[in-house]
Length: 209
Ligand SMILES: Nc1ncnc2c1ncn2[C@@H]1O[C@H](COP(=O)(O)OP(=O)(O)OP(=O)(O)O)[C@@H](O)[C@H]1O
Ligand SMILES: Cc1cn([C@H]2C[C@H](O)[C@@H](COP(=O)(O)O)O2)c(=O)[nH]c1=O
Image (cartoon, rainbow, N blue to C red; front, side, top):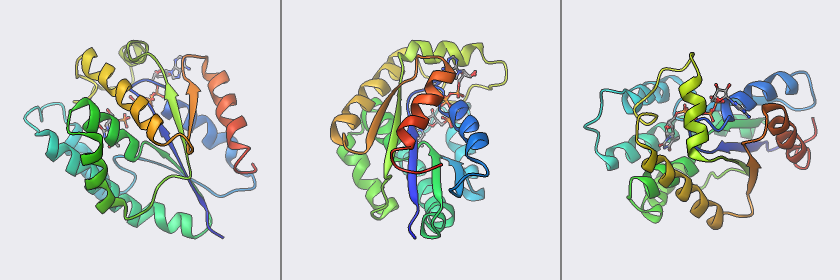
C-alpha cells in the first residue's frame, strides 16, 4: 500500500511545529504508521545543510545559493527518508516542503516562483504532497510569538525585516492560487487547541486515525 505525504506550511511563528508535536502524541498507537519530519533537515546531511543556510552569521549568502541549498537538502531528505516511508505505506508529516521555497526564495527573495519551481523539479523528481496545511497568520503576529519564546534562538531568516516576512505572506497567497486542490487553509491565529482540532478534522477526511 502506498502511504501519504502531508506537509505543513506557513510563516514564522504560525504554530506548525507546536501542532505537529501535539499530533505526534495523539496519532501514536492508532491505525496509521506516522513519520514526523522537517525541512530543511530530518536526516544527517540535510541537518548539516540547515546549519549552513540558517546560521545567523552567513549574511553574505546569495539568494540563488540559498535556493539551491534548500533544494539539495530536500533531495537528500526525500531519497533517504520520505520516499521509502511513503512506499512502505506510512503517512509522512513534514514541517515545510517545496511551498516554502516558492514563497521565501521565489517570491520574497524575488527569484521568481516559476524559476524556483523549476530548480526544485530536478530535486523532487515528481514527488509532491498529497495534502498541504497552510497556516495563515498575520506575519507580525507570528513574529511577536517567536519574539516571546524564550526557547528559540533566532536564525538568519527569523532576523529578516518585517517587509521580507510580508512578502513571504504574499508568496504563500500566490502558491495557494497555484495549487488550490491540495492546500487547506488553517486560521493559525486561533488558539492552539482550536488549530489542532481544525487540522484533525481535515485530516480525518483523508486518513483514519
Ligand atoms: N495558536 C497559537 N496561539 C498562540 N501561540 C502559539 C500558537 N501556536 C504556537 N504558538 C507559540 O508560538 C511560538 C512559535 O510556534 P511554533 O514554533 O510552533 O511555530 P512554527 O510555525 O513552527 O514557526 P517556525 O516556522 O518559525 O519555526 C511558540 O512559542 C508557540 O508556543
Ligand atoms: C524548507 C524551506 C525553509 N525556508 C525557511 C523558512 C524558515 O525561515 C526556515 C526554517 O526554519 P523552521 O524553524 O524550521 O521553520 O527556513 C525557506 O526559506 N525555504 C525553504 O525551502
